[in-house]
Image (tube, rainbow, N blue to C red; front, side, top):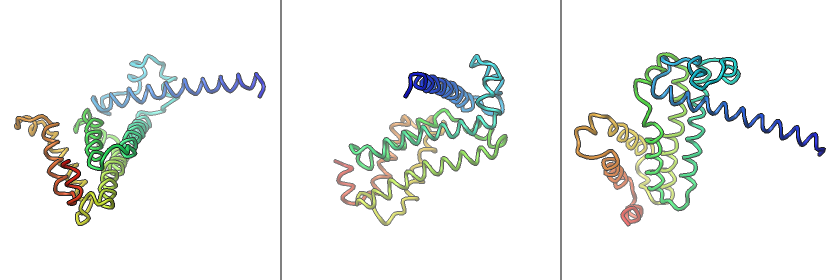
Length: 216
């Protein structure tokens, strides 16, 4: 390969890397704003101003706020999928530890997303809301069901309880415990309550062999 060609390749690589960083910077900022302020209360013009870039530069990456919202959803779940995959592939963890790590990872990811914010863009961009829900169901419920199915095949979980039921019980319990009125009424932290609920669900779902290993 000639020196000129090498220089051209390096230049193009550098340009693409710069554009990727700018795009990621926009996505990260938009995600934070959408999650805390809401879709209807922000504008792409404000984003461009906050990020200290011209509108023309901003629109080079995203032509509309709706397009940006879809990109934010996909970027969020792409990163989340990678995090989950690392948990699933961690051979040092027992299946119950993988389930617990996964649930806590879900909570960490969604802790700043307020119900009012989700309701806002459900009304404003129903297509984006449907896309978000589909990604959520596919990743969260799908992953949990997969973990419980694997645990049942390995003799860790009871095979007579449908994995979908166990997965939904855990998800609903987590969502209930996060309500401010629940946390406010009980003298326990979320972490303490979750640990207790997690133990209750696991104890009822484990096989005899799984229960021995879970308690050890």
